[in-house]
Length: 123
Image (cartoon, rainbow, N blue to C red; front, top):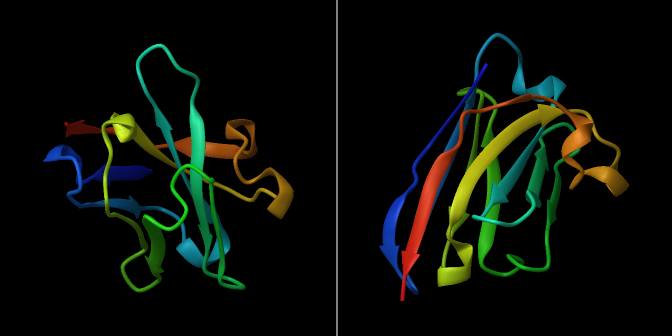
């Protein structure tokens, strides 16, 4: 199971840290992807973390502003979001899978999904 939390309402330029806790499996055995879906838009893969090998990937839309990290002892992945913009407003989801590097952003590559946490950035 995946439990995502940390969303909320923040002003443009502010920061939030999302958490994704994995239970029933070991984080070291999987990769965790963060996705988001804004109203009326398709789900977008924004970041990926795999502790085995230390792989991290970012979508261009968040590169330089978001940082993904993981804590194997806590079985948790974090998404630090800085310099937030109104266009970052969305439901954020984490998902677990084993995508190859070139497909990390494809939602079909993931097995399980968290319930989502809402992020609203006001202008």
